[in-house]
Amino acid sequence: MARYTGPVCRQCRREGLKLYLKGDKCFTDKCPVTRRNYAPGEHGQGRKKLSNYGVQLREKQKVRKYYGVSEKQFAKYFDMADKMEGIAGENFLKVLETRLDNVVYRLGLASSRAEARQLVNHGHFLVNEKKVDIASYLINTGDEIEVKSKSTQSAKFKELVEGHQGSVPQWLNIDTENLKGKVVAEPSREDIELPIEEHLIVEWYSK
Image: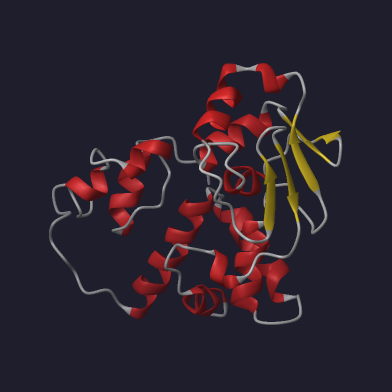
C-alpha cells in the first residue's frame, strides 16, 4: 500500500484523537481535532457502533498512522515482536519506538515524525558516527545519534535547538548544544503517551 499523501489532520480526525502528525500545529487552537472532533466526510458526525473487528481495525490503524509506517512494515514488526521473549504487544510497541525516525523525533531533533523521516532520508544523521539514511533503521541500547556536522549549521537545526524544551523519555539522553543523543535503555511501556490498547492489535493478527 502506498504512503498516504493527503491532509494528515484528516487521519487524526478519523481516529478521534491527536496523533501529533503536524508538529507545532498540534499544540495550538488551530488543530482540526480540537475544532472539529468528528470523522471527516459528510457522514463523519454520525456515530456508529463498531463490531469487534472494527474496534481492532481502528486500533491497528491508529498506531500505524501514529508511527507513520506502511501496512507491510507494520505486519513485519509484529511478526518480529511475536518471536521475541515477553509480551507480544509490549514488544511490538518497543520495536516501533526504536525506529530511527521515531528516536530522532523523541530526541526533539524534529517537530514531527514525518519531518524526522524526511531529515533522516536526506542524510542529516549519523548513528555511531556512520551515516544512516534509512528511517526504519532500528536503534539499539548504547547507540549514539547525532546531527551531521555539516548540517548543524543549518537554520533548521539552530531553530530546533532554540525551541527545545529539554523533555525526552527516560530511555534517551540529549546533548542539545552538540545535537547528540544516546539510547541509554530500552523504551518502556510507560514511555508511550498515546492511549494504545495493544492487545487489540495482537487479537487482530492472531486471527
